[in-house]
Amino acid sequence: MPATPAWPPASTPRLFVDQPLAADSEIRIEGAQAHYLSGVMRLKAGDPVRLFDDRSGEWLATVSRVGKRDLMLCLAANLQPREPVPDLWLLAAPIKKGRIDLVAEKACELGAARLQPVVTRRTVVDRLNLDRLRAHMIEAAEQCGRTALPQLAEPVKLEALLADWPEDRALIFADESGGVPMRDAVSPGPAAILIGPEGGFTPEEREAIRAVPQAKGISLGPRILRAETAAIAALAIWMAVAGDWSQNKTG
Ligand code: SAH
Image 1 (cartoon, rainbow, N blue to C red):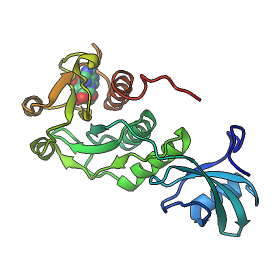
Image 2 (image 1 turned 60 degrees about the vertical axis):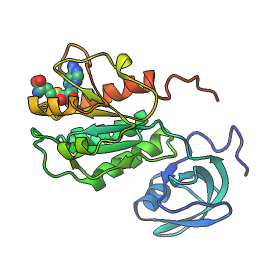
Image 3 (image 1 turned 180 degrees about the horizontal axis):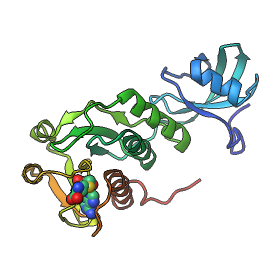
Image 4 (image 1 turned 90 degrees about the horizontal axis):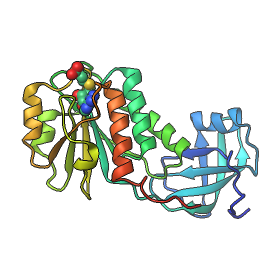
């Protein structure tokens, strides 16, 4: 059945698949995704599924065969191209498991293009499970309708990050000791938001960050926020003043 405003229904499962999707092809779904579609969602032959591959946008597919451990899907129509994502990176110091997972999930939902873990002097979490963070971002992308996944970068030390800072990218640094409001720090073009760990930045780090010509210290208000709250709040206000929340949504 061709895609129409009423088809596929809003309840149609939506999945990321890590393989290129193309018109009229058939793909095999295995493992946890197959279990989800046939065991949890109880899909049968002919039922619709929405797929995206982070390359070619979103597709409507229909189940062609349900096996014991796998499912075959037929690609029916391209529903939308891969979206343009605002060029915003989130640079966040690793924090405890559940909290960094939340940051990964929310960064995806809020529209960040990339999550870059940054190791600072007071970072206490020394092992970061990137596979787990990526799984959280994929689940968030499936749920929120993204057709482009945020990139997840390997952790980098703050000094190395600053030494190699791209000339054309604004560095918006959330400074609990004070700064300008976000609306006075944004400029058109690529940007990054830097958030410290639970213990904050050291005075030397603060100085090194401020020495980067593209850096601007911002305040997120008079209260000290937890690192994950600061990350989520900063992403939201950046999206509202400089990202894609300022456009009218149609359709
Ligand atoms: N322990 C520190 C607070 C760290 S909060 C202290 O007591 O001073 C963790 C991070 O969240 C900070 O490094 C900063 O990047 C961000 N943050 C928290 N509250 C903020 C605020 N009011 N303004 C700007 N950034 C803030």
